[in-house]
Length: 222
Image (tube, rainbow, N blue to C red):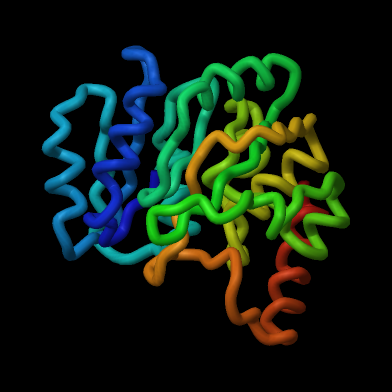
């Protein structure tokens, strides 16, 4: 989990995650130099499974998450945002799917103003394949989990990534096996402070072209 000024929702998210995880699990919280009470809330859990990486300067959501991945020790790694809610059965279902795949992604409920409005797949349906996800990302990090073997190829992150989930998805599509679960296993919270926006204003055409060229160079190097 990468955090930054997430005091509003991080407690509810961590409560939902801890209910799903066994005592042998770890939660790596990489904080990007928050200036609010995020770390105080995380520390207040006093749960030995939670390990905090404090940031001394802002890295941004992509490379702060990379820091968390570099410190993860588990064989199976789940990505989590600081403001969502995990639903019962997520971990068991995803771990079962990972028995035959290297990366699993699942659907989510869109949560806005406390209400489930629709599913993530109705906005951003998953499309299989390297080309599809290079052209337009259909991966959503908070809905992803993968086996450690993927990190051997995906780390370190290339420079100038548009988003970490796109890179991890592309690596999996090119080098490994991907499984998509149609069941929503989280509530994906939409609010004014989301680090990334599912809907909203698109980046300029030049920016999108530059991102795709950077991704293409990185993919050709795999």
